[in-house]
Amino acid sequence: MTPANLLAMTHADRVARLRGGGTCTAAELAVMVGPDTARFMLLRARPGSKPVLDLAALRTATDANPAFRVRHAHARLRALARHATAVGIEPGDGAGPNGGIEPDRVELTHPRELELLDLLTDYGLVVGRDEPHRLVRRVESVAEACARVEVCCRVLPLGDEPITDQH
Image (cartoon, rainbow, N blue to C red; front, side, top):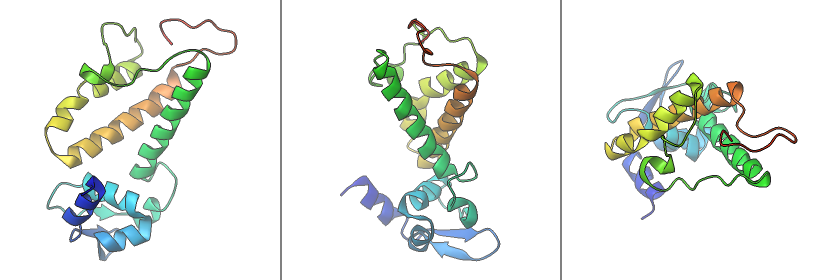
């Protein structure tokens, strides 16, 4: 049984409240916003709760949609990794303690970078708690922190700028 099938079975009878009134089941939500967004939003809520969902926001590709924010951050990070490889920087594989992050070797000074590093280094603690809603919320926090870093910090060299340890 795949994790997606297990998830579908465990949330099949979940009911969500809709902003503006009404309720829907997990299956109905999947039809209205797509199965990935439906799973994300149901996992995001604490077990036993009935999340209040804004269908209009969940149908958009904007920051008002938490599932979109995470997908967008993932796409931006994949693009960043591709560009890093293209300029000769080999991204890590994320393996090892702390997700492959070696805090002693990282020279980060900007508060936004440090915030992201903190979220990533204690990610394993969140995963170990076996509480899916906390994991989903952590992934959202990481996505938001990545967006903030992208706005204020240069990650890759520009033009003919040499590659340094900061990159």
